[in-house]
Image (cartoon, rainbow, N blue to C red; front, side, top):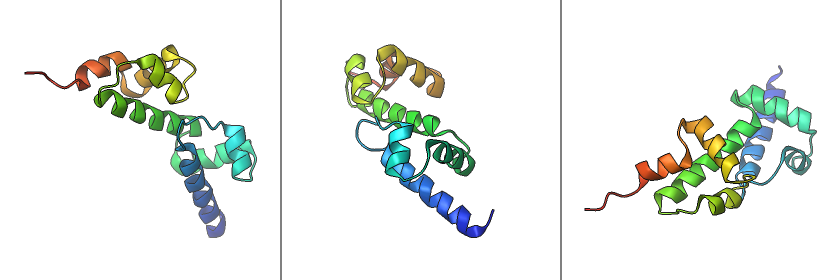
Length: 117
């Protein structure tokens, strides 16, 4: 690949990463590609080539991190967290968290809960 194409691809991925991190993490592939003036297929292919991961994996990684930060700060209503971070429902959030961390959000809440003396 020519150097100019590699630079353009890295810029596209950087812009996609920034757009995906918007509050709510609700931007889908079609909308994201439209914002970045490219086709969804091109964006998906370039993102995977540059990062080594699909765009969905990256987006879910950000969402899981945000959920864990909220849980660590004391959030207890997992249903509300699921909605806030763009998951279809609490069960979907639990599956994604388990896939990324090997534990459910409830398990993580027990681990992250401050110890009371």
